[in-house]
Amino acid sequence: MENSLEENIFNIDRDSPMFWLLKQKDRLTALHPDMSETMVHKRILRKFGGDLENAVRSRCIEPCSTEDYINAMEDITTRTKIGRDWYKPQWKTKPVGNQFQNPRNHMTKIL
Image 1 (cartoon, one colour):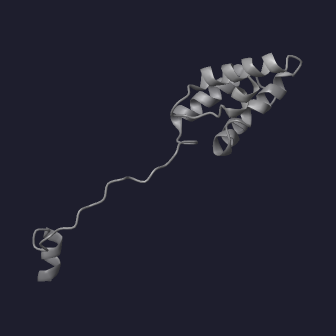
Image 2 (image 1 turned 90 degrees about the horizontal axis):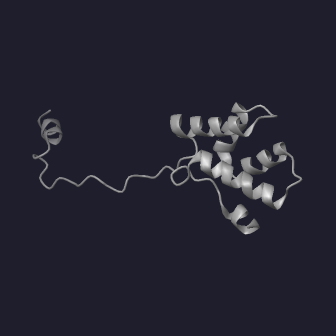
Image 3 (image 1 turned 180 degrees about the horizontal axis):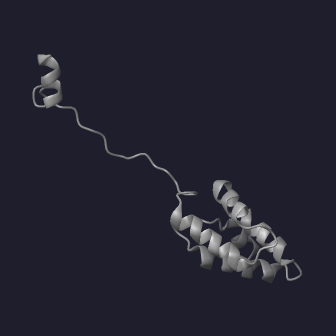
C-alpha cells in the first residue's frame, strides 16, 4: 500500500481531483493513523508537484479542511491550465510546389 501511495502522482488528464485526494487521504490514514490532518494535507500536496502545488497552497491558508483543498483543486483544474502538459503540434505545413499557386508569393513577385 505504501508503494501505491508513493507511485500515484496526480495527473489532470487522468484523475478527478476529489476522488484522487480522498483516495490519497484514506491511504495515508490507513498507513499512519496517528498523523494529524494538516500533516496528511502537506504530504498529499507534495504529490502535486510544481505549479499545481503552489496554486493550491496559495488558495488554501492553513489550517484548511479537506473540502477546501478539493474545492481549490477543482477550481484550478477546471478554470486554469496549470499543471497541464503542453505538446507541440505534430502537423507541419506542406511546401507549395509552384510558387504562383500561393497568392502571397505571386503578389510579392509582382511588387
